Image 1: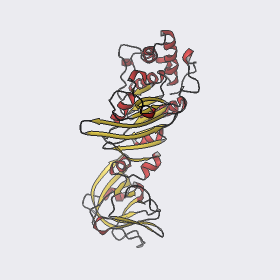
Image 2: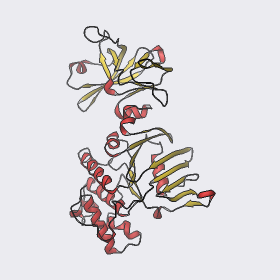
Image 3: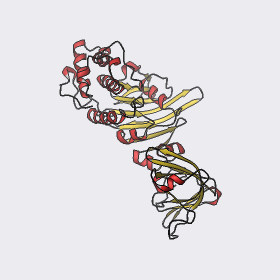
Image 4: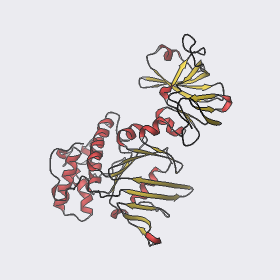
Amino acid sequence: MSGDGAGEGELGRSGGGGVGEGGLSAQLRVARGSFALELDLDVAPGEVVALLGPNGAGKSSALGALAGLLPADGARVVLDGRLLDGPGADDGPVARVPARDRRVGTVFQDHRLFPHLSALENVAFSPRSRGVSARAARELALAELRRVGLGDLAGRRPSELSGGQSQRVAVARALAADPRLLLLDEPLAALDAEQRPALRAALADVLQEVRVATLLVTHDPVDAVALADRVVVLERGVVVQRGTPTEVLTDPHTSYVASLTGATVWTPAETAATASGARALLPGGLVVSSERPLADGPARVSVPVDAVTLTGLDGPAGGAAPVPIPARVVSVEQRLSRLAVTVVTDQGSLSAVAELPLATADGARLRRGDRVGLLLDPARVTIA
């Protein structure tokens, strides 16, 4: 979303984004019927945090509470040192800043542009709603459209824009409000596969430039890797994992996180540190070893998909160790240029996924019910 060279007008930002020190500090407590969200979240100025989780995990509730669109009794939200929700110092009066006064910009999956307004007027709506003059608002709107690479399309209405262009306008509109916090709600989900990589790269450039504290909700691990500094995973309203995108995706703590990359997660009966790393006893008496030290966190055996190999039950050619785990194929699924082969072990009926190149003879021959040997790379297995 590179701009095309124009200045930002009389309301141009100083320091790229106008965000002061502090960023977001939130302890969200949201109750909606039988569902409860408990999320403690900090986002530094210029940092992008991705919020991942299955449907119903609480991601939308978190965004709604931060934007001031959902009641959040018991929550405390501080943005750049300003209390938006919760009790003041020394149990002072409870704050509840309305949505329009929060300096929070939101980009929705469905864009939500005004169909009767041009791209310029859509973006100018944010500063105009804050009392900025029409002339100054249009100057700022044009600067933001240029920032996202749409300065030459300022006069077009949403119906004359592609999906990717509409999403860029939505980003420009959010930034025109000079937000202290930017909320991105699945910003790339509505785009087709051809548009998504280009907009993802452009969005990364914009976020790097404006340096606004940003919370990104996504189901796509590629978005998290490309855009986020940290990842927070929600399931059933609580945090189940935090870390950098690499940490989370290479060592999933739950089956949901594992599903994002095709990894395998097993729950061991017991684990122990060993002289060479760690060892886990799994249901059915199956024993798995790792060359890594025993990890912290919930008990798990975490195996990335590229650490799984399928072979004959006799093991690799020449009878080399280790001895493969007897298993049977339960499904073979094509994933672009690779085959995802799901197997179940004889001991404990544990499911694992291996990926094979689409063109390999072994992959072409495999069928449901086939007997195979399962090998795990101990250098890549995590045991906790």
